[in-house]
Every structure is written in structure tokens, then in C-alpha cells.
Image 1 (cartoon, rainbow, N blue to C red):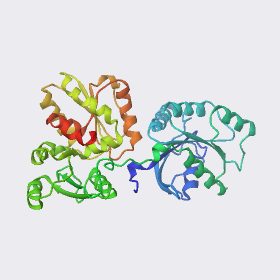
Image 2: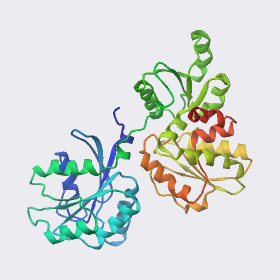
Image 3: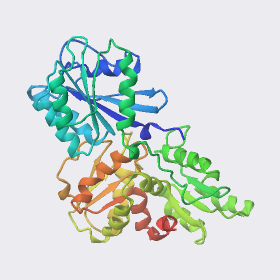
Image 4: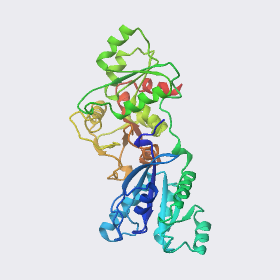
Length: 400
């Protein structure tokens, strides 16, 4: 199955200023896709570059600012660099001139804390090759995954790619199926979409596209329609779907139109099982009952988008939760992978969207601080199902 952007391997490039991080990306890709200059600090913020690794697949390389950047602005750039370590699948630490000290060791500590595999590349070997004693020291104390290279030596490109392939963990390479363990060949899967102000003009939203593709990959049959077409379709076709997957926003309406003998869930919940901490969602959702006046709620959106009057994360979910609990609740919305503004312990509940544009690692690392702090977490679809009294029905298909 082809990987979408959200499932591509993410590889971070780290090191001091002017050690050749951007030049490495150009060298590996065979293209001038990153700006290279002799002036230290050319790369000021993490920049994503996407290309295909021959015989391997698509990857996104993240070119980061130098870890030794100085001053107040430099400190901010360094923080942004370090923030990427829980969002990538592999780190490449670049150094040159046999200079390996506190900056490199600090980065490796960050890699280890994030349980992030890494490789070491000593660049500019045409000017100064890697010292044998330093190489042995690095192998003894850090990793044996070390290559001495120059961008002028094209034979090193394949060697670096082979090291990348062998170091990336198998978990990162595994693309979990959305529905493969709960549907079978020939099953009829009814997909229910809503078209509203938040729906992009002329196309389906990503979770729907991903679900359709997964149904096809599993040799099942998908039919997609809007909620006001359900009754007419079922009466005319005389078929009984094996599973109905709906947009979470219309859960209540669809649940009343679909016989209780038919399994029902939502796109958001399907994605939550693939990418999120599903068991934590299951356990955390009923904690909605424990919310009190003045509680702070954190909503995590995966993408940045124009906010409409019926935006699900910023408008609908806060309204639903306030109406259900009858409590005065405070909501904070964080988009993409932006930093959470307060300590996680200040929140009574964390609500994560489906995560369609993020990798599994990114979603789980996003949730980890809350899970570790025993803050209840839930998901858009699960929360909506719960406040409408259909939570157990919405997750029943995954308990088979």
C-alpha cells in the first residue's frame, strides 16, 4: 500500500552549524533542495524535504538548525531542533573536523530519552578524515553506526542509505491496516460522509480517503453516501452492510438510521485505533463524567486549517461537552505539533483528533505526557459517541 505523507518515514538531520547538514540532504537526494552556504546558521528552523529512497520508499528528511546556535534567538532555534526528536523515526547526527563534544553528547542524550535510533556521519572527509582513535571511542561509548564521508564521493551515498535502512526500527516501517483484522473479502462497508463548511471544496477529507483505500486493499466493497441518503439506499438496495463508518459529527443521526444489529463506528475512531493509544482512549473517555466547573480541557488538532463557524474541534466539541456536563469548562486548542502552553497536569482531560496527517509515533508521543501523568485522554469520535449515549456501540466492532 502506498504511504501517504502522514505515514512516510521521518528522518531528522542534527549537528552543529555549518557541519554540512543541508549539504547531506542535497547529497542523498541528488538535488539542490536545501540551501547551502559557508555562513553558519543558514538553516534557522526545521525544514522538511521529501524524496524517494530507491528500493526503499518515500521519506521525509527534516533539516534542523545548528545545536550550537548562540544568543536568545539561537536558544529558540535550538529548542525547535530538540522538539523534533519525538517526531522522527531516525536521527542522523553530523559532525566534522573530528569535533565531537558536549553538543553532540547532549543530542545523543536527547535521542536516548526519546528512544530514538541514530547514526553518526563524519562529513567533509576530503578535508579531514575521521580520526581512528575518535572512531573507536565513539563505537565504544555510543554507536557502531558511523560513516566517514564526503559529498564529493558518490560511492558513499549507497553506504549511507544502507545504514539508514538497517537502523530504522521495524515498527516505523510497519503500516497498520485500518480495518484488515475486522473485515473480510466481499464485505460491504457503508461509509457516511457529511458535507459542511469544514469540508474542503471538491474533495473528500483525508480520513475518508484513507478508509476507502483500506477497504479496497482488503478486497471489500465500499459505498459512500451522505446521511440523508441512508434510508433511501437501504430500502432500495435491500442489503445489510457488514459495517457502517460515519463522520463523528453525525454519529447521533446515523445511529438512529442504522439498525442496532449492524456494527457502527466512525472514521475518527478507526484512525484512533491505528495511531493513538486506543486502550487509554477507552479507559479515559468515561472520565467525562468526572469533569467539574473550572476544569481545563486540552484539544489536540493534528492539522492547521481555517476555522469555520461549525469547526469540530474549536466549536462543536466544546459546545457538546458543556451541554452534556452542565459545567463551566475552559478549552485550549493546540494545532499541529505546536507546544502545549501549560503543564499537562493543569488539564482534566485531553482530547485528540484522529491524527490523519500525523505518524503513529507523533500521535502517541503527543499523548504520552498525559498518559504518563494519568490524565484521562479521549478522541473526537469517542467523545461524540459518549455524549450521545452510543460509546459502547461505537467501539464494539474492535472487541470482536
